[in-house]
Image (cartoon, rainbow, N blue to C red; front, top):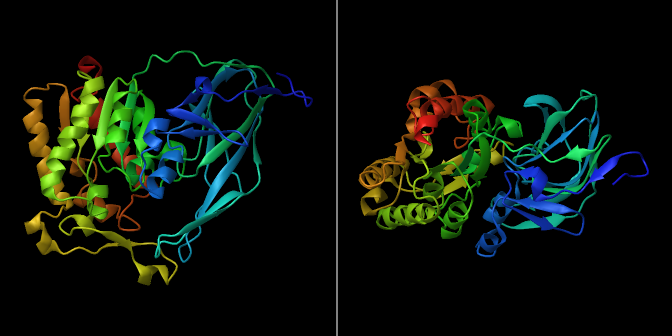
Length: 394
């Protein structure tokens, strides 16, 4: 419809959203979700509930001759007492695949999380209007990538020319599941997370199910993957199981089998790539749990430490080294009867040499340059001519 300002207002529906599995109607607008409602009903903790509502890889997509676009949003600002302030989330507008503008919402709802006690409280905030102007006056494909790490309610979309649904894409849909690294922790922009960069390099449409702190082999996540249309699937397993100290080796193998079995119920022959953890020195040979370094926080820095005892690996506690060995063994066993199942050692994406050059700033998450390196490595190994996601293997 046309507004009294001469703008065209377009309802925000799943028809113009990519990368979201569900859309919840709220009192102010709509909230994209990366897990469906049935899965969300089974979420046992606030961490995953927060992570899946952060729209990593989610973007509005439409065609229009518009030269100006306005998007009303309510962003959730996270505050961690004692830690450095978080930067505002970034919204990126792309025209025919090329960056044409960036914006941020300086205010919004506030979620304050005490890392030491694990408590949280929220405060409501205002609607902010993002404006993108000076776009070319011709028919074009427009995408607005939402902040990868900032929950965003979408209130209204306005343009100075009518909006049409995007043309069907001929690119394969790549669904990826992983931890905060896949979610995009420490990336600077939503198109700068390593899965977004790898999708662009590999010519794929991304569905990013990377959940900060929450890649924990949850059955409801496996069912969500099973029930989502995808041409290519990858699952990056390991780091959260260690830093949450969630299970022992005896439970790990059967849990991985069960996770993969569920995915295969819906995708029996889809290329499925199991990726083991990248290098993380604090957890290579030391089990979890992982905890914030309180001494660093007292100095205004955010760092993490491993608090487990390396000797406990003999009793079945998990480390990244243990998980890499077990995943390689398990995938090799299954691949004997599943020719579309593949394994990728995470150290090929980021290993000791990379760490010497590009150390993890908080000892747990990569910086923007490292996200790009991981993306380039993954694109070459997975989408390259001999990779499991190469066109001839689909």
